[in-house]
Length: 389
Ligand SMILES: Cc1cc2nc3c(=O)[nH]c(=O)nc-3n(C[C@H](O)[C@H](O)[C@H](O)COP(=O)(O)OP(=O)(O)OC[C@H]3O[C@@H](n4cnc5c(N)ncnc54)[C@H](O)[C@@H]3O)c2cc1C
Image 1 (cartoon, rainbow, N blue to C red):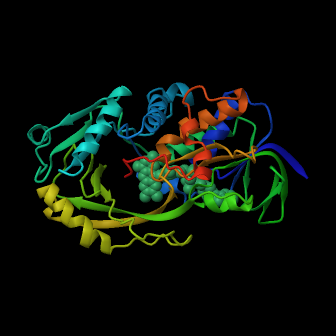
Image 2: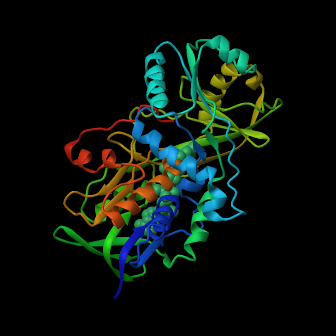
C-alpha cells in the first residue's frame, strides 16, 4: 500500500494552497493532494464571487485577508512575471441603516485598529463620492479605499496548481470515500475506486463536503453545503467607480467587466443543507428580492436585464460562520481547514501558509489561527463573524 506523510482531501484553493506552502516552508515528506473533480466544476472556489475585503468584524479574519492581499501585491515575485489574477482594487461599500449603524461603527473600529484603509462616511459624503447611489434610509457607509476588490478565482487557483507541478506533490484524481481511524489516530484513506493510501496526517480541505469527510473519521464538524445564487445583469449605464456595494438588506452588487453581478438574497431562517447535486439557480430570488432593492439603491438600475445566473455552495459552518483551522484536539493527526462560510477564497493563501507553519515549525508564525481552533466546536462556543456576506 502506498504511504504518504500528508494526505490532503480536496484540491481546490484551500487544499492547493496548503500543499504549496508546505513545500515553501521546506516540508520534505511525501504529499498527496486528492481531488474528485479536477475540472472544479462544482467547487466553491470556481463558483465564488472572488472578492477580497478587510471589512470583517473580528481581527483574525482581517489579518487572514491582509496576508492574501500581500500575496496579491507581490504576485509576480511569488509566481513569475506572467502571473496575473486581474485584481480590481475597487473596494467594498458596506451600507447601514439605523439598526446596523452601531455594528458598522464597531466593525470599522476593529478594521482601523488592524491598519485597514476603510473610510466611514455619512450619506452626504457618500452621495458626493458616488453620484449613482440613493442614500435613502442610509445612516453611514464603510468604504474600502484600498486593499479590497475582486479578482479571477480560476487564475488564482491555476497559479497554485501550476506551481505544485514542480513541487513533488502527487495530484491524485479520486474521491475519498473512507478514512481509517484506529483509536486517536487516522491511518489512511480509501478512494472510491478501491485504492487505499496510508497517511501520516490527513488534512480536510473538502469545502462544502468538509462535514461529510470529517464524519468518515467519526468526527463531528458542523459544516454543510448552503446554496448561494449569483445573477448576472446588464444595465445601460456603466459606473466605473462602483465598488462591491452591500445594501443593508444584504443584497450585494458589483461590476464584472461590462456587466454586473448580484446576490445575497437567501434567507438563513430555517435554511437547511443544499442537496449535493443542486446547482440550479433560483431565478425567483432575482425578480422578487434582488431587483426591487437594486432599483431603490441605484435608480439607474430601474431598468436592467438579468442574462445569466449560477449557484454554488457555501462551506457553511452552522456554529458561527467562521473557519475551523488546525488539528482535532484528540485525533491530532486529522487537520481541519473548513467552514469558511463565504470568505474562504480570500483566506485560503493565508490558511495554507499558517497550516504549513504549524506542521513544519510546530506553531503559527505569519497569522495566528489559534482562535479558529476546533476546540470551540467541542465546547459549543461560537467565535462569530458578524460581517458575513
Ligand atoms: C456563490 C459564492 C460566492 C462566494 N464568494 C466569495 C468571495 O467573494 N470571496 C471569498 O473569499 N469567498 C467566497 N466564497 C467562498 C469561497 O468560495 C469558499 O470558502 C472557498 O472557495 C473554499 O475553498 P475550498 O478549497 O475549501 O472548497 P472548494 O472550492 O469547494 O473545494 C473543495 C474541493 O474538495 C473536493 N472534494 C470534496 N470532497 C471530496 C472527497 N471526498 N474526495 C476528494 N475530493 C473531494 C471538491 O471536489 C472540491 O474541488 C463564495 C462561495 C460561493 C458559493
